[in-house]
Image 1 (spheres, rainbow, N blue to C red):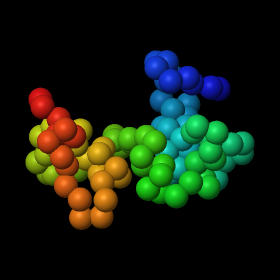
Image 2 (cartoon, one colour):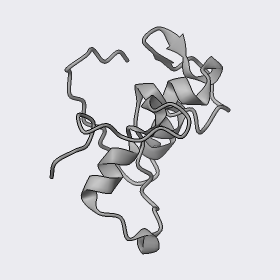
Image 3 (cartoon, rainbow, N blue to C red):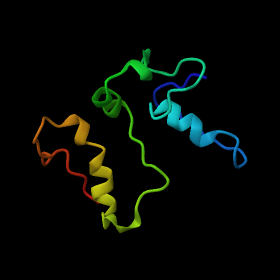
Image 4 (cartoon, helix red, strand yellow):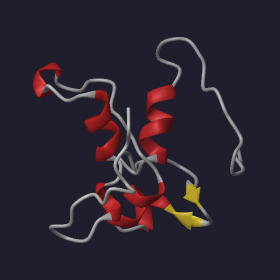
Length: 97
């Protein structure tokens, strides 16, 4: 399967058909599979975690409910891999919700 920039894809199927497993493989969270998953022609299993996090965002379906984060804060978490160590979001990066 190949997905181009700007292309929208829906992943549907019955329970237990492997939808979450596929997403875990794409996100580098599951590495015991046959084949290759690549983002921008780079194997996700060989990518450094920071680089992978800069290429995709993944919100797990079983997030703890007691985090008390706003929608804005959850979205802004996706910008963390783009910051320097100890960096802060710039005004340009802040999401206005």
